[in-house]
Image (cartoon, rainbow, N blue to C red; front, side, top):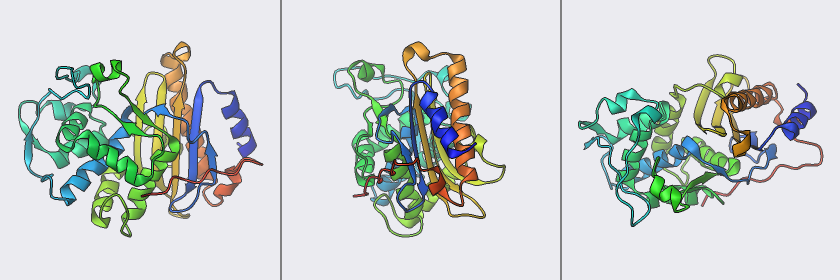
Length: 300
């Protein structure tokens, strides 16, 4: 598919489709509605992972010390009672199998990423705190993204406390982690960033962005999905080209949401990933004529 055909297809798709593409550590070569906000779904777990590593490096907690695995969490709405997660809504039985037992925060953070465990996510948030997650977004230079609550905190949701991301902000955070593995950066030490990349590369839910790549390509990836929302954020490491960032966020309106729409959104992200892969030697080939890419947020 030619770049012009891809852009024309995206113009025909329903809802909001945001894209950020660019070489790692360099300005983007293609952005599309990259500053539009989307409900974050599980992509917010990237910032939670970084917050844990920052807290460990600051000596605020020991990531290898066992903590209680409970299903009772503090709501972000001050006057609300504690909330809990639903097992049927989660993707990882391994964490639920340890309920009422103990596990390390490092292990929980890994399950939060590689299996997108909601229970693990809320446990990590409970220990690091939402302000620490907000600080990660600030340091990455995020303009619009916010992690206001844990997963299934319905009282907070009803109070309009939510989790938002943009493609540009996800690219800024993921890019800061990836480049931070080789030189000091704003998010964590090089060792900490390298450890985060290892976890992201161990992702087991290889959908959307991963489905658009040949088998065996190294990929540091976190995706997120709920009904009407499908996102993929990745650093792709080709063997024959420089690494690049790809973030795609898709949201459709409630009246456009059904099971087939979710399948179609996953396929759309995979198709975009495939087109970017094919252009990996010259990512500027994807830049729409007359539409210069938007510079990424600046890390702070």
